[in-house]
Amino acid sequence: MPAPALLALQQATRAHQRAHGCNAHTFEDGEGLWQLVAAHQPRRVLELGTGLGYTACLMALASSEAVVDTLEGDAIHAELARDQIAQLGLQQRVRLHEGSFSVTLPALQLQAGSLDLVFFDGNMPAFVLVQRFHSLLAPGGLLVATFMGPGMSWRIAGEPFDEHRVGMNVLAPGASWDDGGPMVLHAPWWLRTHWGRLFDVVRLQEHGFCAAPGDGHGVITLRRREVSLTAADLERPDPDDPREATALARQCPAPSR
Image 1 (cartoon, rainbow, N blue to C red):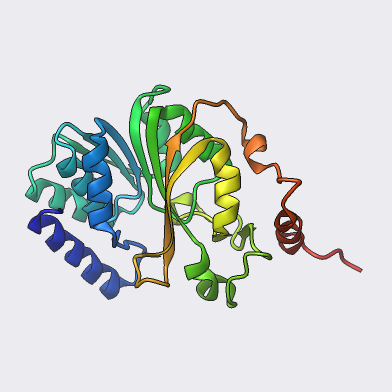
Image 2: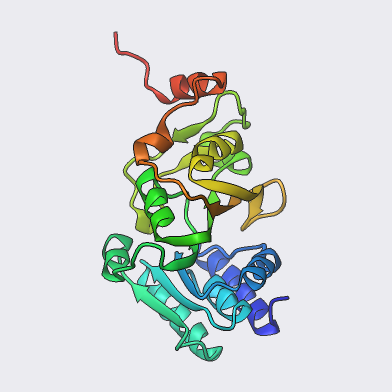
């Protein structure tokens, strides 16, 4: 179970987000993440999206030998997170790297197979980043990522979720990863099909991250499979699933007349 100090940090994150309307959402299933990390006991963890430090500190406390490298692009959030990390006495095991992910991630010079767990707290990593995470994870390593699924359809698409019309639908192409990345609506079936080529799906929660059940982002937990695929392999449609064609047709713009 998360320590009382972590619960206080989670409450502080909620209060900060409400006051500023920023993207420092807290991970609502702290108990689930604690249980996952406690059972897996990762020694080397990478987190993209520190916020105010709640999940980075949680993972460090749930695994006593874990070293967490956490990346944050927002200077204000990074400063607040450093204070929280220091208050919990975790400066030696939670290392915060401030700046654009495109700069801080390569600067870590991570080696293939060097990570036990990757936590991606954003709208959803791109194919090339998913492939990169796979290569960085040790055999049996875990990837935990948030995604916009059924619980976000009204917010970002303005309509109810329809799995026969949604696969991977990009609604904000070109958005910076430091701001969470493009607004991409994902269907759970699509994640199981495409990401399932590189990973075994351990758990898929369709909604409830940073919101009440039935609302908000989803969370997917994946275990690394011993396969080697390219980003193009991940993107390739499944010819036996008719939902692939309808979702793709909806994504493509209509031809001009």
